[in-house]
Amino acid sequence: MVLGDPLTGKLIVVIDDDTFVLEGMCGVLRRWGCAVVAAESETVARARLTALAQKPDLIISDYRLANGESGIDAIEGLRRALGAAIPAFLISGDTAPERLREAAASGYQLLHKPVPLMRLR
Image (cartoon, rainbow, N blue to C red):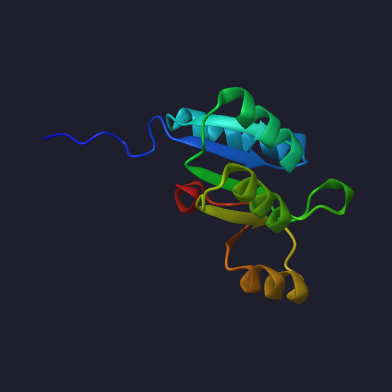
């Protein structure tokens, strides 16, 4: 019996205010067979998910977003809006001790940029 790739067909939301990072992450996920909703903010992600009328299988968010928004807030906002505890994790290039403490306190796993592809997978 041959098992298919468990990522194939999964809907993943990626939130990052850096266009190059967002495009790169989405490109990798699409090559792995995922459907991707790319957004610069939680508000944009919510609008795109509403248009799809589908809940994502995973949320990946940058820790620090534009206009003082945090990835923690973005993830929690999407979870509330969708009424589901969707699996999620944070990515960040910020290694300041206070950021690490905040991420740990949130309960979300934090991966540091650049994220090795096999670790992301």
